[in-house]
Length: 173
Image (tube, rainbow, N blue to C red; front, side, top):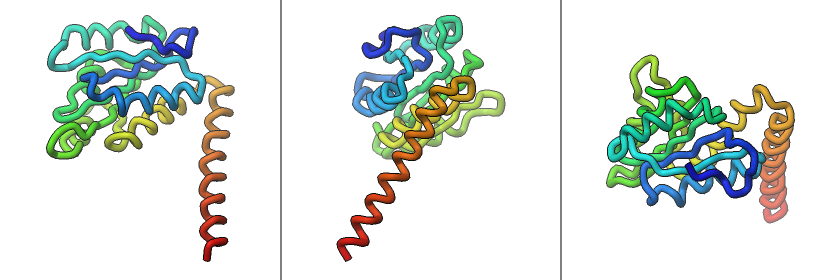
C-alpha cells in the first residue's frame, strides 16, 4: 500500500482506484483528506484484473487501522462493491466518467448493489471525489471531536464563500 506522504500516523482511510487513469480525479479525495488532517493511503487495485488482491485488501483493512474505504472506478465500477463484499468497514464509491456513457454506467453500478452489500455513492467525477473525502471525515468525526470541529469550520467556510459571491453580485448590479 502507498501511504500518504503527508501523514506519519496510521492511515484511517484507504483511497483505491481501478487504474492509474483514475488518479487525477482521486487526488482530489487525497487533497481534501489532507486538509482535514486525516491520514490515508492510496493504491491501485482492480476488481476484475486483480480480484484476489482486492479481496485481501478489504479483508485486512480494519486490522491495519483503516476505518473507511473510498473506491473510484469507471465503466462497470465493480471495485466498491467488491470491497464492500469483503469488509464491514464503510465503503464510499466514486463513479468516474471513463466510458462513452460519461459515468452514468459507473453511477448505476456503484449505487445498485444488492441488499446487504451497501456502498455510499457520491456524485460522478471530481465533485464526488471531494464529497467522498468529506463523507469519510464525517464518519470519522463521530468519534473524533477535533475532526468534528474541523468539519464545522469547513462548512462555515463554504457558507462564507457563498455570502462573498452574493455580495459581489449585488455590488455589480
